[in-house]
Image 1 (cartoon, one colour):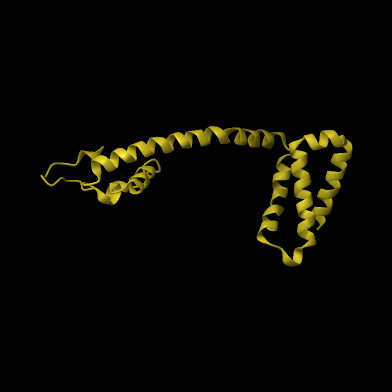
Image 2 (cartoon, one colour):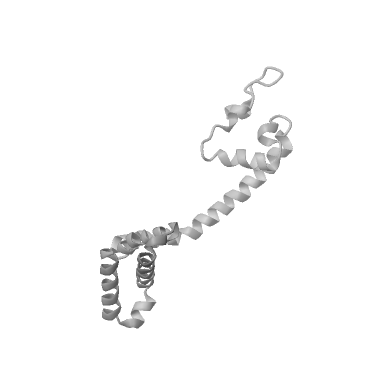
Length: 153
């Protein structure tokens, strides 16, 4: 309750000092207002506090990060990197899908556990970048006694 009162006073001082127009155009100030309002709501319903309200209380920490310039830089960089990371993930999804189709076409008879269907092949190929040992199910020696080079490579 004490922190909610302090954050509310700090928000009112911030809004008064920066005037209302500058206050509502600053995303950090909007986040501050949202956190303070949610804190007031959560203290008003403490008898029926839900998990969502408790999570919103954790936003107070993010509020404090906004006050430091270095954290603003880090959070800005993280938000700017979301779209490029999403694009890289989509590209990886397309590449894995193509190789899964190729794997089902050529290896469904050799390893039906990993390449018997598209979904199994997709999962098997998706596990490779993570370093998971999916090749344990593949035979190391072919039926004619030669080494299965696919496992070695």
